[in-house]
Image (cartoon, rainbow, N blue to C red; front, top):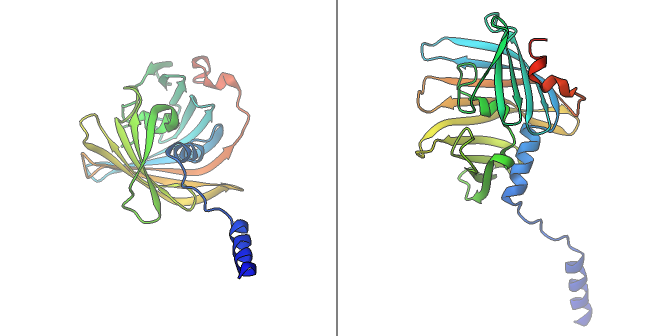
Length: 241
């Protein structure tokens, strides 16, 4: 009997401990790392579907450095080719080549008239802008996070995200205004390994919940992380060059 007890105790001691559930802070950090790597250079496009049934496709090159430097060059269509968007710190501008000057833009303004707003594209470090907590999930095999804005300088007052338990990548998101009204909902699809060991959704479908006939899709075609980008690229003086 003693031998049996000793054997059982040895097996229990040797068994690996069950992994603890991740914290909300850990999950939001993993979301940020996937959706907005510290430094990257990418090619992407946005397709906007309008109320009248038409659609418009925008070609873009995006660069990001640190958590608060972002630059976009528009390559298509011809009506916006040459336009650029810059974020440096808390400030954002759009450069219009026909005027040869940059104009300030705000977080909550529409990004090129689509259903993403400027902050959806240019401010992708949720850990800095929101406080996160884990809540019960109604989607199988996912974690659910509720995010509350830390200040008024955010795109939304609150966000709910569902992340896959298998790898913490996002499945869907709900985005709410200050009144608590659902403004946008997102679906994350086309999980792609852009680099060895780096997988993320290549397509984000943003549904306008206020105007149901509108939606926009952001499609990432390439993404290279840890690229060397000159600091000058994120200055107003470099716009249009």
